Image (cartoon, rainbow, N blue to C red; front, side, top):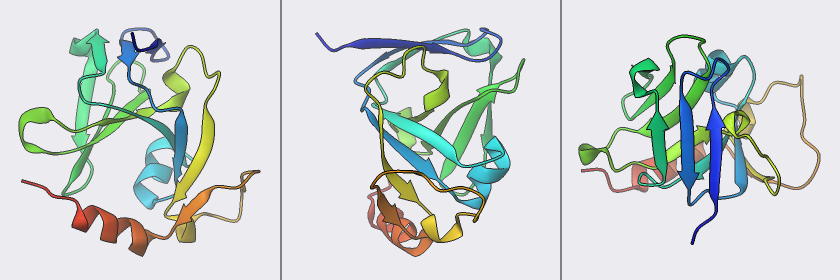
Length: 145
């Protein structure tokens, strides 16, 4: 049986049950993530069928680009997840790592839009670093229906 994780927003209106969590943490330095979070966005990837949302009535979603949407708690404003907009709601969740009740075993492995990272911060350790052009080429190569 896959390990189950739990998490919630700041006010607790949105609670999550999570299975299939990938322990790799990804940091995004793009302008949208910086504006949404106030810094970079740190996420873990969870398969589309690996998240059960309790309190879904408090979830609000904003279409932040042509290909993706960000969801947040409409009561406290906590960022919840980022998902590609795919037909049939089959997109994986890029879940805000800070929502998790237990961060044990997570490891920062990738930074994207690294060429847009402000000089203000730098992470310790070795991570895969992708430029905006590299990330956008990967998204363009992904099959979208």
